[in-house]
Image (cartoon, rainbow over all chains, first blue to last red; front, side):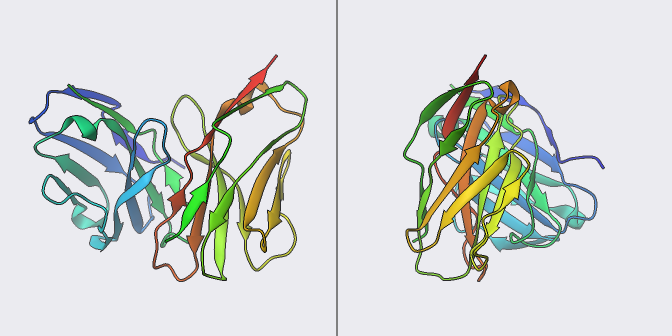
Amino acid sequence: EAGVAQSPRYKIIEKRQSVAFWCNPISGHATLYWYQQILGQGPKLLIQFQNNGVVDDSQLPKDRFSAERLKGVDSTLKIQPAKLEDSAVYLCASSYAGPLYEQYFGPGTRLTVT
Amino acid sequence: AQTVTQSQPEMSVQEAETVTLSCTYDTSENNYYLFWYKQPPSRQMILVIRQEAYKQQNATENRFSVNFQKAAKSFSLKISDSQLGDTAMYFCAFITLSGNTPLVFGKGTRLSVIA
């Protein structure tokens, strides 16, 4: 069974530029999550999708971050414009149905904003 | 608010020895799940072990076991016969069964297994 795929693995941009991350969850998983992991901290949920609908985006900085999950499969997370404090690893995870099921994580994208 | 505290930022252990990682949490809920995740340098987060709060028996997965003390809100991870491949960040995490809150992670403990 293929795992959660993410791309790119690394990205370096200058502040005020835009960036997009892509995630392909495990086939058949209805729930998809984006987490932000700042160096030295645990992951923090940014947004949770159930199929193609948003379940929880309470911690997503909506003035600069956006995410979509078209057709209930792949998802993209965008930052526009980026700030220095957005430097972090962005993790995508998926689960069969909701957060009480085991979440499977992708390898993450390390973003550096200079 | 739900919080998870890992008081040991770094730990080290000799290969084949046993090590215990600490975790405490705070919640007013009675029904919840607790997890330990491992994040090796490759960054891929992997579930190590899971404990349902309504179960009194401590969970065990091969060399990994937990000591769950519900009254004390404590959830420690014991790794027996430590191996070099156990070197990683370990995160304690928590979610309520109500599903109204997301999975909440602690800040992690960096474990180094020394040959």
